[in-house]
Image (tube, rainbow, N blue to C red; front, side):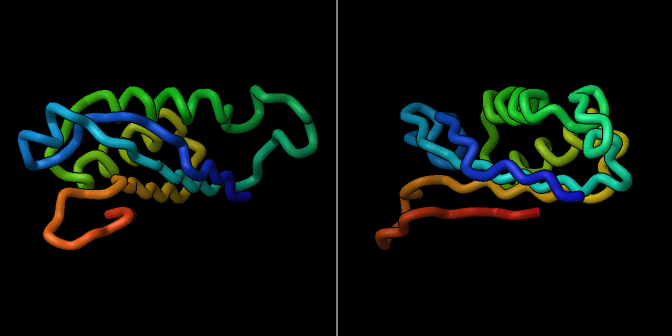
Length: 113
């Protein structure tokens, strides 16, 4: 079974430039977690699966810690999810930054691990 949360919206202060660290930006986070033999399907009990609220709380916590690189933010989120959910077999995380400060107009910059 794969659990996905898409477009978790956060306002955060990630970036290499001082302007990004001061002004902040909108970020979207996608999380995909594969779980073998989830007991929540037959039991219909939140205790037997991954609680989406816990996943979002981890994302929020990690997004609140400023980093220069999106790669580092995505790695921290992935690592925290793996630590919190030992039943997770595969964890993928995508972090996207809206309108990064580049020489050309770019809608989003994103990193996926």
